[in-house]
Amino acid sequence: MLKIEAVLQPSKLDAVKDALLEAGIEGMTILEARGHGRQKGHTEFYRGREYTVDLLPKVKIELVLHDDLKEKAIQAIIGAARTGRIGDGKIFVSRVDEAIRIRNDERGETAL
Amino acid sequence: MSTSARRLSLLPALAVFSAAALAQTPVAASASAPATQAQIAALQQAVQNAQASGDNAWMLVSSALVLLMTGPGLALFYGGLVRKKNILGTMMQSFAMMGLVTVIWAVAGYSLAFGHGNAFIGGFEHLFLRGVGLTPNTDYAATIPEQTYMIYQLMFAIITPALITGAFAERMKFSAMALFLSLWSLLVYCPMAHMVWGVGGLLNAAGGHIPSLDFAGGTVVHVTSGVSALVTCLYLGKRIGYPQTNMPPHSMVLSFIGACLLWVGWFGFNAGSALAASPLATSAFVNTHFAAASAAVGWTIFEWFHNGKPTALGAISGAVAGLVAITPASGFVQPFPALLIGLLAGFFCSFMVFKVKSLFRYDDSLDAFGVHGAGGTLGALLTGLFATRAINAIYGKDVATGAIDGHWGQELNQLAGVAIAWGISIVGTLVLLFVVDRVIGLRVSPDHESAGLDLSQHGEEGYDLNS
Image 1 (cartoon, each protein chain N blue to C red):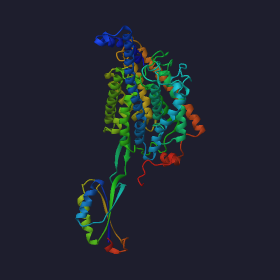
Image 2 (image 1 turned 30 degrees about the horizontal axis):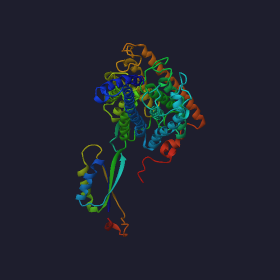
Image 3 (image 1 turned 120 degrees about the vertical axis):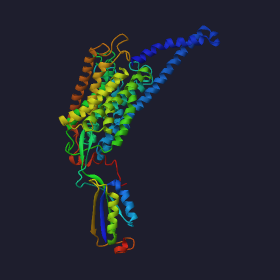
Image 4 (image 1 turned 180 degrees about the vertical axis):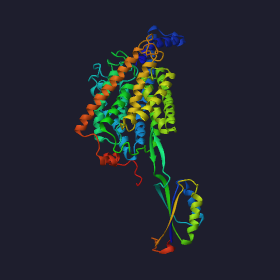
């Protein structure tokens, strides 16, 4: 089992969600997040005062899936979220030890 | 005020004219002489009643419009500009004035502002609204019940201290704010209102020692509140973290709605100050709208050059600055000078807010001084320049009103009015702040300040997204 975490531009969330569903990935968790990578935020002006906003709104999606779905999921996310500009986001992949369905105590990949 | 009196004197002539028209009908022609006398009297009364009811309708609507400026107008405008942990605290400061000043006004405020006193403050004859009934007080407005006049003036007394709250946003105790502004209303607002508008007042344009033109409260409302705002934010000190920490407005949307409500309410503020549904009210209405519009343009142009973008906050702040600046002039100037006054206010107030504030590093949090103090002072001086007898012959038909009209001395009177407003505001505010600081302490504790006024002062939150 793998966990894929992807940090995305909020405007790309719907496209990524649709692409993942099309790739056969059904479960996901979405978090509203703020952050920055090498992209350093933007400036706002209020009555002549300049404010640097360095933590920008992002969304983070989390998926736990079968090992074989890894590339399919990654390609779906990249395909939907890439604009080629700084700020497109990142994908992290890690191993997951166990999954448990709370409703009936199913364990392992059957719980996904 | 003088206009209403002049219009009243026309009434008998009107009545005679109508009676003559009636006399040509067969019924009237056959009537006996005493009946005609009775008819004339009845007609005269009918004409008076018609004017009185028209004027009273407009003044009651105007009163409601001026209250609309404080709540929700100013409450939303200021509320949107603070951080979200302080929105209720900020809105409550305006709303508290609607409660406290009303009580104070009924008990003593109206008497101290509009009673017969000396040149500086009114007398005690109207304490507890004694003698303030439903018949007109011809000293002020000859066609409306005195209670209408009293409630209309109350709305001005409410918004003036509420304007000050913008300077000390996010850091004053509710209790200290309530005591300070209640006393301020009695000791700064009432004397200033009496000097400018009260019978026998020092600066009263109709018969004062230094006749100073202030149609709707440029000095009485905006200079006093703006200068007191500056004094208060200097006395109180900056918010913790200012200016290193970002403190951007939490909801431009609320501020936007608030500013638009202020604009609409201002029609009652300025056009209502004609105290009658008269042509002068129309003039003030047009000038008010023109100045707001051109000031929004002026501020936006300044900001566009300064920062490269025309902001929503700039446009609405400009409109408010224009409304402030036209307030003293609204019943004295022609429409094009009004446009110019607005444009100048847009440039001047944005300059005060962008440049002067950062130069001197005071934390006038929501720019109460930069907009009301600066705009009110500019407007009072420009009133002396552009006032014309063609709009309001306050000194008589053949006597020049303002400087361009031919009466350059008026500028000195305006200057005196502004200087007195600055003086009474600085001294009065300093004394009151000192006293209130000793008695209950002005500032919230650092813990309370970082928790926000909503929680620390009121035990509530403006936005509870978990409920």
